[in-house]
Length: 458
Image (cartoon, rainbow, N blue to C red; front, side, top):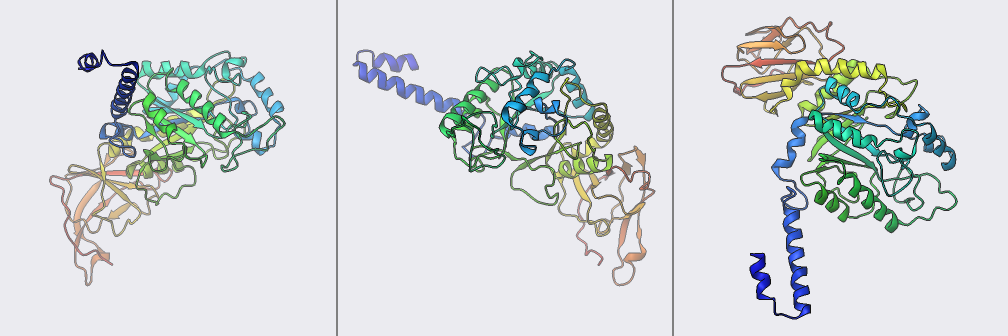
């Protein structure tokens, strides 16, 4: 078709040929944009939402800040001059780094994807970039650690996403008064957003061209500058990629929101959510004297987000030698054992909104066919449940945490007596005390699940 059209203009003048070629380039560019899986500039097609079938991911904050073992924002929080902070690169060895070991930890958690910090606020690049000398291959490590991780993920079927910080404390043109997480300028700095944006585009092009499939792109710290061509570039380089909401004026065109740490668990969002938290309380990066979240906290937080349809990234911070601390590995594995038992309650389910248990108002319910899953992200108050307004007997009730079958029958409960004489489903025999430090999930299997319109007890 293209040859036929061009042949019709073969005898036209040079200007006409050039104009036609330009039109063709534009047409093919539009077709390429349409092939990215986007139905328009704001909404991805159904195929790209597969990221939200994967549900649990592992976040990795690793950079030269691990040398200090204090915090990933040590340069800013301790007011360290740039030249002094640069010495950290001289002690970044990654001598014991194994990409497969990273994947091992992710698999022990039950994660289906890893999000890796390609560049954090200090501007240090964890790949062999051509845009700057401030990179991992110029440290004693002499390794492109991102390349090794990307290969390991592909080989083992682990999906890979990338984190990229918009602030850059090393680049002389990056200072942005409109943004947060900025440090004091130093001698030689000349703020120039046009030059810095060109730098970011060059780095993004490397990251999304040289490391295989990247399933999601995690911008961090919105620059509060509109640059719509930034996400256009991302999507052109990686068709079908998911982009978060912390980019260059992309709140209207992003795919998902990325709340972190102290996000209100009961807040609803119109977008898909990928929440993130770290197993460490004080730092996302490696901290030598870290305080770790409890097993109960981590399992309850994971359950809350996954049971309401969101994803969650759980973060670890490797040491400068490339190893993940033993305590961190143990925590991830322990959480993974719990997750393996309850994972079925998040698979192909929808959050149930037509039933709210009168005696367990904090419970969250999900459903798949005739199976109803009851989640308790805020803990259990008793060893049994008066599941008003449900009054149908399930074929089986299973405590997913242990695999045990629980007792269940429909009966008149004392709290139902009086003016509200309604039978209700009673489930009992839950070892609530033994499971007080983990999130409990119960599966009820009905022959024919349906919602019975009943007046709830007061």
